[in-house]
View: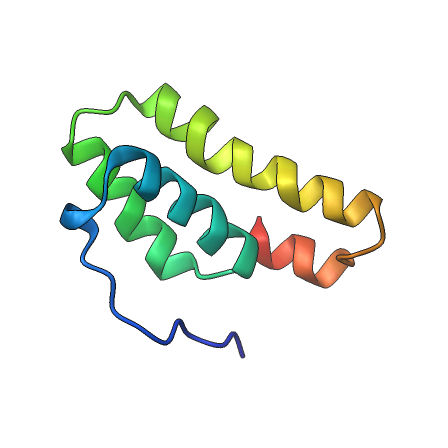
Length: 82
């Protein structure tokens, strides 16, 4: 079972860059429900779907891929992030 974040974060209070950073972090940690909420928030702010993908989701998976390559993460963690 995935550990849940300790604190509630009010997504509308975050800057767009903070929101994208949080999206990458939550993707890395496997928090699927949080990532969905962050994607919806980014889209509601008018960020293009392509930008949500490239600046949030793909960027987060790039970090996962690098950590997998470096032996920090293993297949189960990569699958959880995907």
